[in-house]
Length: 152
Image 1 (cartoon, rainbow, N blue to C red):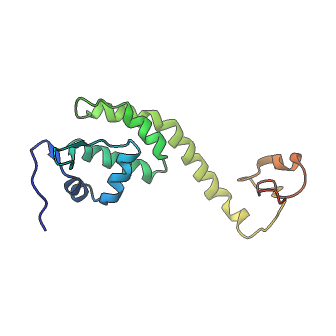
Image 2 (tube, rainbow, N blue to C red):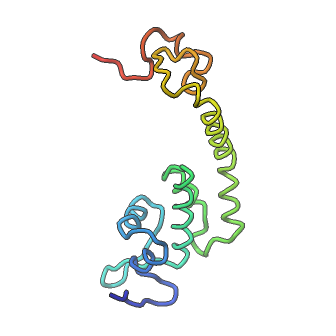
Image 3 (cartoon, one colour):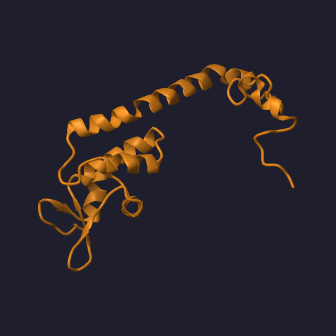
């Protein structure tokens, strides 16, 4: 069934879903959590500005690399609301995350490089684990599985 037409600058939630490839329920979720904004018509229907498509693409790309929704929302709050964000606006946001992404890349490389020593070892002390207990820092806290919740 074709979606109803709106003015050139506004999109219905269905049109945003169709164009972005994101489910309507996800768009409602994003809106509830302050990631995107809509206005309401006289009949209380949502209308989104066209730049919402870019924001949704940014949200999805950010989620794909593991950025938390709260961090994404904080970044989107820095974008201008009175105009469509420019390439420079997006570049500024991506630079804010560069150090965090570099740290994640380093963690993933360490995981890849040390994984063969960890798979199937079954050690409870994790004395030699380079990933979860470097230099046996947890051993100084006492015996037992330090990362598991204590039994009462």
